[in-house]
Image (cartoon, rainbow, N blue to C red):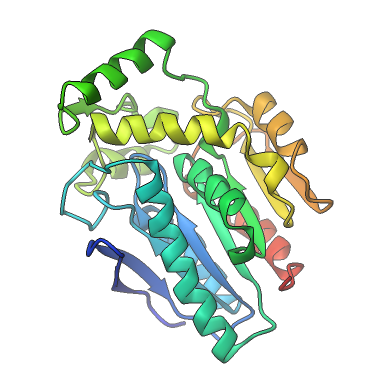
Length: 287
């Protein structure tokens, strides 16, 4: 079992994105997985699932979003939604270049967890030629709490007044909404890399993604997976299913874990959950 290592990818604006690279246990790999995390979390939360995928033969690159995780520059900030999407697009382009060179018949799978789910969905909708399949794990595409029109107006006003870098607390302070497991709740409390605050600009970018993700299903036609947690307090599961069923793909699968909380990675039966994830990956082919 090869250990992961931290690598850097330089985006078109010069930002150095850190990501955790999990080399596959076989060459060539069975597939290339590019994964995106939630608004507060980072790639380090998902070491178990990433390593399991690597042990199953997949190359896994779990990106830390700019300003999050190991990315200390401009902490909690992103200028706009396009920049966040472009970061992922550019990384996918590099992965597909290596795929074409080393293993042209293997798939590239984009995976989004929580908030990262809507970034993954928008990226897939904009650039479908870069993605062979889309995996969404408790995705934030239909959150239970969304900005009101008044809050959206205040975000727009803040931008007009030039206070894009004003820091705002992320309203996910209670670890119990992520997991029922005491050890993982303590892990979240102690995690110095978790994002506790975001700039007005990042929150505006999140709203921009919300608006675009609502229209994304008609442009997503690749195989897709939706994993839901039955006790999720962050995601609206019913609306997520409705959104997912609108995808143009004829190959869609929904799996719900009725007793699970939001972060499937922290569930006591996560072995079975990741078994299901790997089994879905095994059925994906390059388009």
